[in-house]
Length: 187
Image 1 (cartoon, rainbow, N blue to C red):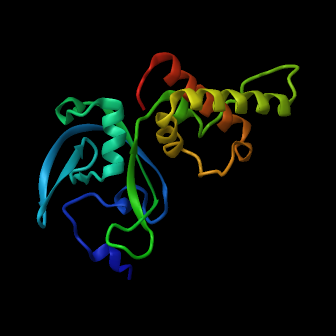
Image 2 (image 1 turned 30 degrees about the vertical axis):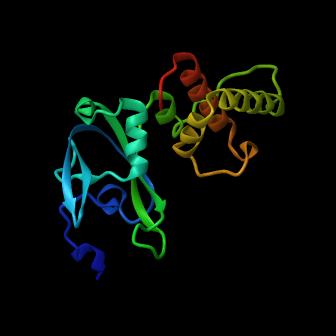
């Protein structure tokens, strides 16, 4: 018997979203944020349209939401987020745990999972990869700290270098960074 199933919580757990494995969850719409008492601390709890239980917002998730939707949580109602889970540090110490994360959905990021490779007739793959890599580095430098936040929220496995991404992933990263740079849209 899986004893995790016997633990009841008034708050959403990662297993409620993707089961016991890290993965992509649904896009949901935020309803409200309420402050709840946790011992001596008050913590924000986000309620969304798809789940009756709230999501306790950790600092990482709060930073993502503030960067995109502003610091006033009353303005977040009706705005979309995508839930996903990944291995994270255990707040109580000990081994890594599966944690809930939020990201801002976008057509280009969501389409990466069914990639449509751009047609570049006459351009060698290595030349195309080199061009994408140079564009990504140039844009990332101009965005500064915002690029680090974007990098941490990409829907791909964390890679140590750009040449470990597929062509389609590089194209999606470049497009996302260009959108942010040209529209000055916070991530």
